[in-house]
Image 1 (tube, one colour):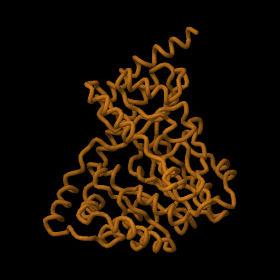
Image 2 (cartoon, helix red, strand yellow):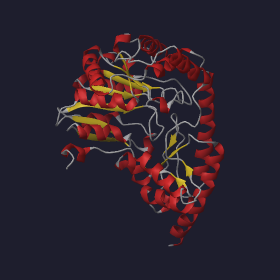
Image 3 (cartoon, one colour):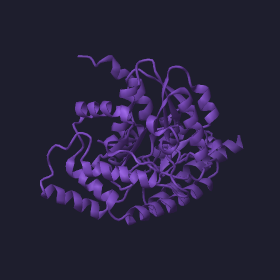
Length: 394
């Protein structure tokens, strides 16, 4: 038996593979500090857990409406009006099984074979993977450290062709923590409107900001009708295992989104959605405390990395990742990631897991305790300092 030929074009998410490799090393008795997975190490807040438990006891264990339960769609629309500055009709909100569902449905609904999708590089690898899977052509736009990990709108404009169907943006971003400014977004919006291109705006880290306010491109004039907003509950509310994302889509795309949900998952878990209503409508103290802790961890990891010779690390404005440049070690990101795991028991990701621009970078997730971060930095220094010293002696 043979797999369908289309399977040759689908990629993966390297973080899960790296975590499996690290766990295999742990199984041999080695100590490993995990900095590869982007998962908050906090528990889901108690009020959210209790709401879902009560929903189970109340019998909310049956099929949901395929777009999501009405009270959650209304809560998402209200939250968007408050935080994003645009108020979608709840009918344009679709609850999905994780944020990846939004990526799949948007790309499946919009991209024909041969169409082009502009994706960030470095960027979340599933954008490119799904584009290739449906027969589209991913066109990377470089996201560089010297530009504070923000895309260059002029470079974006130069990549647009008559085949460009979709532009993907992610702010705050994985893997860099970069945040697009309002000015950046206004220029991207002008390009999208001029060339009649849709935008997939991945805003899954929109609540994890360390200054300023989140700006959604969908709130800019003329953009709500051409933007698919991706958000969810995994990162903000430490609900990764609940598998709940959502899309806010233009009216013309709603029918397609609905058909894709019906044909794939039928709908997201009913009692989990009840918990998500409480997440949005209930107290936000746990979110605020989590973001404050992430800020402290960010400063710890950035200061610690910059104190290691051969490493240059920007202080990210959002999310919970750093993407340091490590060419001063004399190794590529992939080579250093291997050395750190095998020699120091520190599991990080090679920058090339997110695109070609990251060849001289590694990605670290600081969604772990300060104690783990301090230990990882200590171990990393034992590997990197001799590399830099040996390079200087040559």
